[in-house]
Amino acid sequence: MNLKIFDNPVSKIIFGFLNMIIIGTFLLSFPIMRNARFSYSFIDIFFTATSSICVCGLNTINIEKYFSIYGKIIIMLLIQLGGLGYMAIISFLITISKKQLSVNEKIASLMYIDEIKDIKTSVFKILKFTFFIEFIGFLFILISFKTFNFSAIFLALFHSISAFCNAGFMILGDNFTPHNNYIFINTLSILIILGGIGFIVIENLYNFIFKKEKISFHTKVVLFLTCILIIIPSIIFFFTEYNSAIKNYNFFQKLTLSFFQIITTRTAGFSILNIKNYLNVNILVCIFLMFVGASPTGTGGGIKTTTFLILLKNFFSTLLSKKNTFIFKRTIEENVIQKSINLFLFYILISFSSTFILLLTEKNINIINIVFEVISALSTTGLSLGITENLTILGKIIIILLMFIGRVYILFITSKVFINTKELNLKYPEGKILIG
Image 1: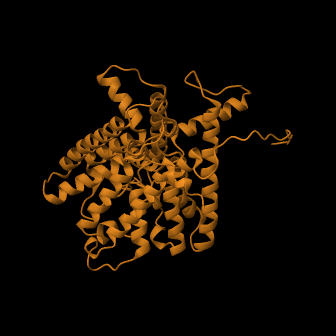
Image 2 (image 1 turned 90 degrees about the horizontal axis):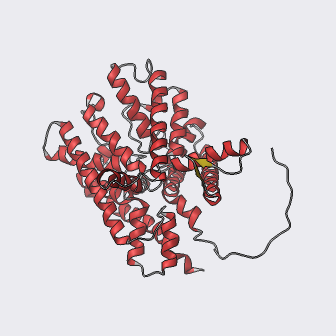
Image 3 (image 1 turned 90 degrees about the vertical axis):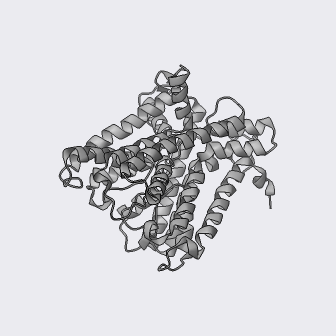
């Protein structure tokens, strides 16, 4: 058995996620973590721990009713650990591991960092931004509750962390109706967007505002795509669901809910409205938005906004017989295009295979619900058409694997952890094959 894969920094991250899931499952298994009237179920606890670490939000049990305050605190901590993202974890591993600079350079390339800097400083910077944003979000959510007891303080902290980490866990209970609470909804929306655009963009915006630095090309692309993927689908949702899913609300509530549901669909998975009441066209829009997901180094999943734009621009460049692919008058490197195609094909392959298996194991569930669940799990969004808790044990295991893969799949594709990375000089004769 080749144990060298365990020495690779990327494999350490993958096994680190797995270890956190195992520890989370162990902690949530204690009787004190759940309410007395609920019995222990290993697969459901394991599912919850995975969903928390992978900041997905899918649930097979009612988190609000099943877990005690201690269990909810553990879930909140698991969300925070998972939501800090790849950058902090990778940077931390590089800091504590005494590897050669060449290894650091390879890992840094996975984090979309152009230059090798003080990794420890980067870690603290990420933590500082995260905790500051979550604290501001906590204050606004607490104000929206209009009460300052322990329950309100905990709920405000829980939902601030859940929103910024794009986890989608909501434990407000049946007595709280957020539809009229504009401060609460809009605060969640801002936290979700900030968590989704990624730490590099946040840092660049901070430096632009306070240090007068230039807006980077990456930031421009991410902000442009974020706006497009929020505004256009929100308009579609508003007009198509005006007399359907949001018909019982006034104009401003309809507008707010439309934007919120589209924002949360891309990465977070919060659901104030019942998704099962959506029109089919908006179910399709949700699948597309979950598929695209957040931006690189953000806390959300999906193939990433930049990947989607590169694929789209490359398609039109090929269609128009252009030699290069351009975005905002910048040429996209061929290796970046190839990586984007690989990520896309990997995502499609996993989605199709998982759907195929689930259609065999979940014979009483229609294909639309299965596809929706698969994309939601793989993109770590956490939305569902209500089938999660009704899945068979094998079905739940498939969803668990999808959530885990969705959290670390970029590392599988880009790092080549499990194969020999040495280049071979072997070359075969060219073969001509027709396509199209």
